[in-house]
Length: 436
Ligand code: GUN
Ligand code: ZN
Image (cartoon, rainbow, N blue to C red; front, side, top):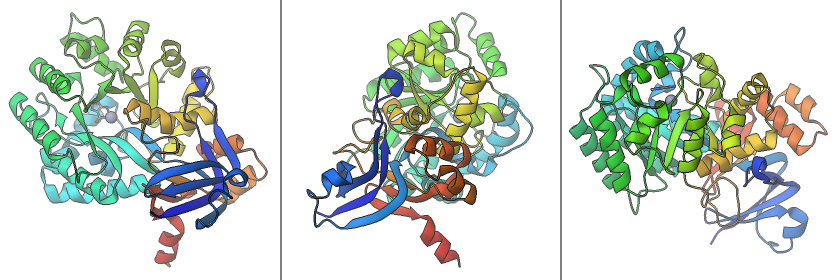
């Protein structure tokens, strides 16, 4: 039994403020961790006596928040971030499919998986729902990298039997690889990993493969369904052309049994009220990816529409279409997208979406996202004075106002430390001193 206490300002937003949830904020707080789990989270004055004798890490002047949850990201696209000049379908053809074709090479996949996991940690992201590639071993590479760091990642082999020549599977091959991965990565000794059945999107799978994905999902009660939905006008027109009798894009997935409480759909930028109501009824979740939607010119996600229907929302970086691994910076862009929609995004709600909200979308609310006693101790230490400008802007500011400044002005520079299951896996100051 090893107990450690962390003294800092604490912020956590377990329930969505849009539904009456209230932020748990402690300007002078104490977080107590034992064997990778949270034991206590509250005011230092209230807890100090109970935990007298427990070694204290003094992080005064910093803010501890739950580890960020990236609800949609593509690890094989790490090296193609910031690729110029296209919208979704031609961007995939020109920049992404050639890159993903390289992941049949296990050594390459291992290299990028390690870079990716470390980049998540540098940005305070401790959990993520991750696209791999069509190659079975691309998932092995990622899961091994995550296991070595004890990170809570959920991923799956991409199903795409209608993909390009260099990047496709078959219905039978896709099913066999998916079943093998589910069997291989389950159970004792497999860390905090989870599996997601991952058809790329409606256009790259045959009807038979989409039906098969639905059957695999139904057969395994613990796996998620992870795909893209209603991102871009050209994509939506192509889906409507192929599935002429479907009511809308969501209906295509629905017909194959892919819309349920374990389904996570990235983007959902262009949704009818019918589709949003159906998502709410099914309990499906959305990964809102603002930097990607701006970068590819896809459109402006309507958070207010999702709220009206009561659809659960998390935040995704969607690298490589997304332009940053920083979930803080992604929240700054989510704020601007909301502004362009005539709405506003409260910084505490934004923090909720990026932590407990993402955890809920991934079905992990009982374990991560809020630093409640009993939850896993994944947390981030933020430095509000990380840059001279931030130091000026946040001096004397309230916690909520400081958080907003960190979302608009911050990125990996403000992440001082990242803890995964109670262990410090990233320390900005040690990296800096090692570099000198
Ligand atoms: N739709 C299908 N594949 C992709 C992808 O790799 N990135 C994004 N943003 N959208 C997709
Ligand atoms: Zn994506």
